[in-house]
Length: 381
Image (cartoon, rainbow, N blue to C red; front, top):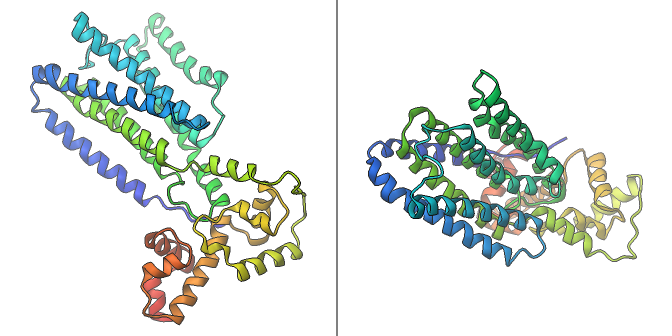
């Protein structure tokens, strides 16, 4: 089965983020402890509280029926209340809830921190597997952590390191769904710009860095290293909110497309055959629907009387590839025709006329299918 999967942009993002974190940790060495406690922490935590509560309010007013947005709004609300409570007890009551240096960390602190960390996983879980998370599964994820915490009181073995690393196991489990999500996107869309999994990989990279900094802070007893953790969490709130509000949710796009179908349209269960294949290929060659950037799997219902599941199965069985690969093969053939007929045409114009969302996507896809770049192909042909 042929798929086109690229992770270079996500790797670059992770490397840049790791570099910034390293610079931040190095710079924190020069932050006086009293300045960190008296100025930096109050400012960053107040900003995190304000950002999380503001976005929680804004997103809750514009959920538009999206469960994903409601989940993120509740996550932001939880963090906003937690940070607000910390600020209140620290500056008003004068009794910090948790030591920011983390060198006095106890099992209760770990439980609280892990609960907040787990809440950050609700958003990507809902995005990758809509409706999967329910009360039963939530308890199945949380209860083992609290069981370990309870055992720490009774067993002579120190279980705190295991409890501290528990969220890492949950993140690893979530990563296992990323590839399935990407393949699902390729089976339903001909363009993956703004709807593929790169945002979720970047979001989890930020989460991973937050965890690394937190553990480093615990091991080195350096309270000023909390500076790095605090700005990372603030960045995560802003990045996640921007994605929720402005990223196209592919599950919702498919759901809305299915709802637009007329009730009288048949949903047959056909066996793929030459007649359907011929009808599809004639339609693709005559109407050229692939020139539309937003061309989707469900658009094939114009010529094939099948539901989404059978459309996907038909493409796989007849062409041995994903819908994404099937459509982009037509786009590449169109691009080669244009380059032959118009050698002076700019690649940006070729990509636009062939239905690609950008020249970079055109170049990557062309190279993946033809084994050479558009420029090299043009030289040889």
